Image: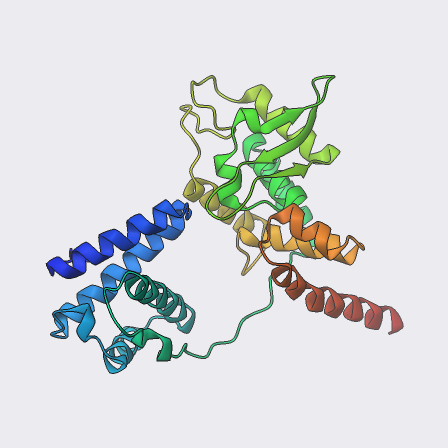
Length: 295
């Protein structure tokens, strides 16, 4: 994507991104907003708009249509509209514009698929194919047994492995980031054992992240995602993503009677309503199992 050439656009974009950083938004969020707003402002320039104060709802509708014409998915377009609205709210709050024309910009309609939850056969198969690699097995086990996010796992340091008085692993400490507060994540025997086994063979390095490459460098999110995607393929698990391990943790705990509030705190959901979305899925699975037993 080309750099923003309009001086006003460039200045407002920079100030907006700095404002997001000052509000401690996560690095991934800031990068996503920066790309979306750069794309929006470059469209304005191509469309002959020289100042943000001259933007009308019709201009934003043309931008939305341009995204559709370039085969962006409804979900991607909806995210870019959210970025646009946040940007225009910032402009209004700082008196760079007098009217927020983005409020009238409608989101495209799209179906939200229910969370993908691995079956017992699937997550057992994933574990089996991962056992040949102690590091990968430890990663899979932590994600399955704690429900933490892949970014949280990649950011874990050795100091985040909190131990009891007898020097045995007790829990993981997830540091605060962006708008997410810190939290303690309990570990079961399986997860503790997987971590212990990996720490024993972990390469010596000055890096303090738990998971590192063979050369001792921090294992990045994309490295973890690629490794798990390959494991999915090897295990014959189709249409699955890394986040489905988190979905599986949530659904499993809810179906076993763990309270909604407790699960929400364990996985770091900011809103209880996010966790509630899994209840219908759990109920559907329970009904299906009951129907199978009645056959």
